[in-house]
Picture 1 (tube, rainbow, N blue to C red):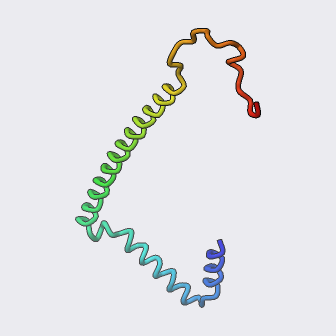
Picture 2: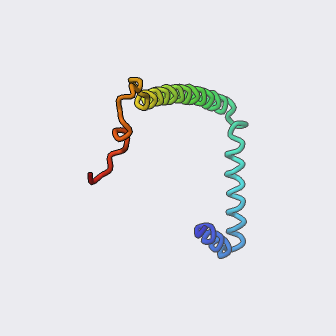
Picture 3: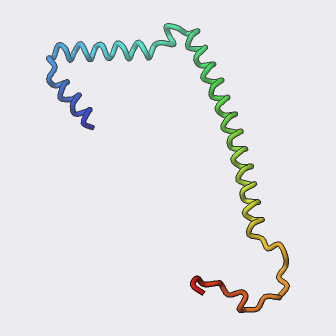
Length: 106
């Protein structure tokens, strides 16, 4: 925000001729960048193909990463289920006193 205010103040301090030149130069550079594909169609097509390849590669990587995360999550869930499951059935050998929690300080 401060930078924008500083730029605005500096712009106001510039003479009108300099401001006009700056505006014209900015427009020319923007036009130059926007018309790159018109001036160099083969380079633009090659860049588009590379961008497509990179996009496909990223999609594959993202898919593999998602599969890996899903399988790891399933392993974690299976381990959690196993750790909370009762391995032997209750045989009724514990008394009510045995089932009470141990309190600290006893």
